[in-house]
Image 1: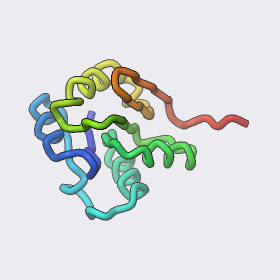
Image 2: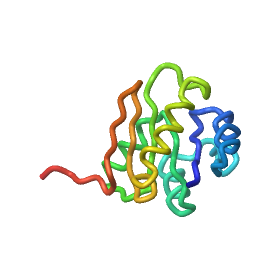
Image 3: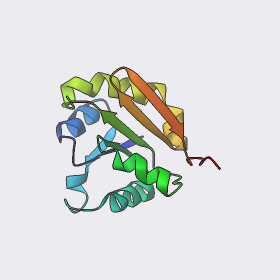
Image 4: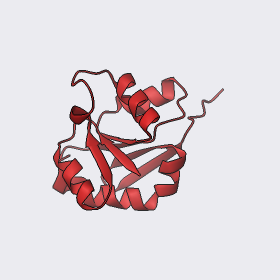
Length: 124
């Protein structure tokens, strides 16, 4: 599994994930710093990366476009530093590995985790 860390999370995530043997890149290493979310999503889909973010726009983008991928892990909370959420991130990666490979939107808010498998199904 490969992880693309969004601009709103620090470069430290890349080093920590790589230390665990996970291929990881920060968007600042890949594309324009002011790229819109849609460009980031397209790159991640094409390169088969899971997007790690705290930006709820990625989930909204998946919902509005009935997106089929890429997988997105979004963290909500006030302390989004590496040491504050790394343990939860590792647990999500381990627990939901199969869903992330198939494409899913995972939202982590404190100890609560919500998963929606993609494509997002709209209510009629």
